[in-house]
Image (cartoon, rainbow, N blue to C red; front, side):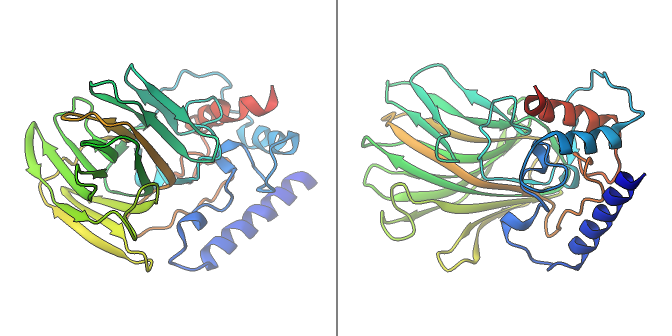
Length: 314
């Protein structure tokens, strides 16, 4: 009983602290504790048997085996940030799986970032990571992109994409380097197999746009309207483009690097500081075990907990 009262008191403190905090947090402040999705129940930065006891208490009475598939999540349920300190594609990664074509592709996660290296072999290659869940409804994504093209020519891209699984509908924001060394920031859109256009802005190689330097981009989808932004070096977002006939159904999200014709250049593409949220909203978590952020603890949360926490208790 004493343990339950302590946990309840902590949850109340956490909830009051969240509701009293600022309304416009930095990206890294969106979650109350960075390792929550890895099993850190009491938000002390550690994953151990204390956390295991908390999960066991909250999940008591639930069926302990289930065959739930990964659900389609709305932006509030899926809201999270990721600085990639946990390697995507491993059992520890709650959100990501690897996405690569065959060929000369190397994935590197040693610097708490997603680095994809493609070596030129005169054919199309792509590599990166893809979100495990489909996302439904409105959402906002922010991520850092950087490109370091190691051979001359065009085109090699570093991109954030959301797409319908048949690829008849997709939207992209990305950067590439043209043959003359100029950097291009662009968006591209397609719906039901018909191109919906986009905008490309060229920047000299230097200053904010240069080899290996990250540029922060943002995409919001509200209904059929998508807005694409990039962050100025002074810290504010500048709108690149708005498209009003965008696919509004369930989508997958991926961070991808590719090397394409005519020159198939070699490239290092890097992603970091990913954030998924609802446009203009801050997620609030009422329960420590509410993994899908729907303000209740149920079998879906148990499945997500089992997927994430098992590696820490083996």
